Length: 277
Image 1 (cartoon, rainbow, N blue to C red):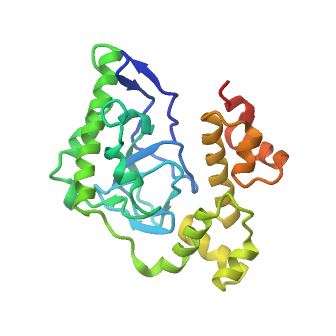
Image 2 (image 1 turned 180 degrees about the horizontal axis):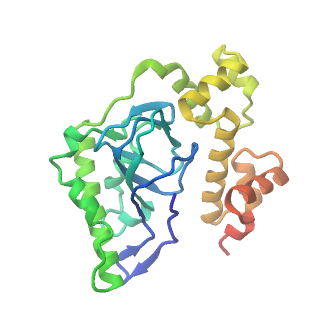
């Protein structure tokens, strides 16, 4: 998936960011997380979208919201192409006009993996679909193009906020609640010495059942899930100014050399290459 560029300023007021729109065709990926927020709309596809243990059936026009660090994965069950349009943006994009980040409430003021999906029946009359197509319209100058993207995104966020405040999001099915409790527990203890054995003991589940059921509801094994989340969190800490060693310890890595190797494998650069000086 496209990555977001570093934030700079245009004219001291409107943030310039590398938000991206992705059009079909799209190749599904494994379970993954982003460092920025994402909005995407499904055009077509036969299957489900897995978000932190919740499963939502693909339906034309469904809107999905993902906050930084929120895991998600498409789970295709048929041969129909999976098409969607997505937009990635950093949280800082709202700061100039909304320093309290009220517009980001639909991303952050909810449980992980819940209340982040909106059906076409409630979106169709809002104008969000039309705004989505305007996000990356090319105007006369780069400045006007970026300004249009920012203003259009803010309009979309304002409309989604109204849907969120009215509780018009889709509530996840209850058939995976037990595993969602485990997913929630793992997220709450990411930075602690978490172990598969401890999780099994706490939730009275065998190691085989845990790994099988966890992969069914997240698209990932428990340990790959934990490592992915820890690395994303560590990268965020390092980008904010924390030293690599301190970030590794803060994110639950007891062995810096293991963290170092995992970081290079995921990001293609050393942790120190991400540090701000």
